[in-house]
Length: 284
Ligand code: NAP
Image (tube, rainbow, N blue to C red; front, side, top):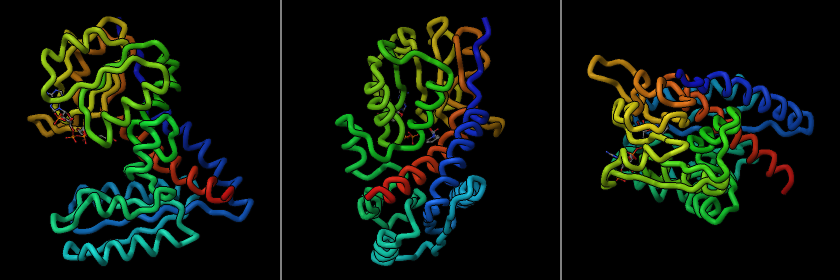
């Protein structure tokens, strides 16, 4: 048996066609969705991420601004910039690229972003809204995983989903989204005993740990769907996920690769969130 490959790159392209269409419809009504991306410091990986985000906005016809500041920007100065963007009518989404320099309180910064412009979905109000089953702006990575599952016709209602990794930005919101879709959810963390015992019972496994190829074929129930969120470098410096693609693909029913899986969806859902924020702003 060879698994169906869940092609995140293609699903992202398809989703971007829909986003582009909705951006045009909004523009025709005089609203151009706008994203502001703030980068503090000179982390090379962050530079790549923010320039990809800004480029993607252009590809769907959205307006974007990239604000870059030196690593010694004070927390007060950053909060002032966020306050200005919160009241800027041309900006519908604000993203502060993480990690921030150590002298800046990340929580204070994320809470300063207006919940209606919080396109990363990290604000406590958006996390709480998801938790109580009234999602507003959703965390991009799990939101992208949901789109991949829907697009691939993977049944979620009544399915047992096992999520490996329980971070605030991936694992926990993923659990809430799957729960809302009717799945029975098991959320594993670093203290989980006998991880394979759990993954072997799953209809859907979501791996979001950050450990190269830790989920192997013998941990997967035949026919299960496996989504790999991880982004790692192996000993040879090659990009790989948390899932051992080679051993899992011969057991699973469907599997997402790395690269070309969740990654392209995360950025696409950032665009979707910015679009949704602009659509809501028009209604309010
Ligand atoms: P994180 O904040 O470091 O969280 C990792 C989670 O994995 C924690 O909950 C941790 O448990 C758990 N964990 C660690 N070792 C484990 C083990 N042996 N068994 C089970 N759980 C274990 O990481 P993250 O930000 O969620 O990111 C996870 C991975 O996804 C990384 O590779 C990251 O680069 C990638 N990522 C990809 C995208 C994308 O767009 N594709 C987006 C975001 C993240 P504790 O809670 O007990 O510490």
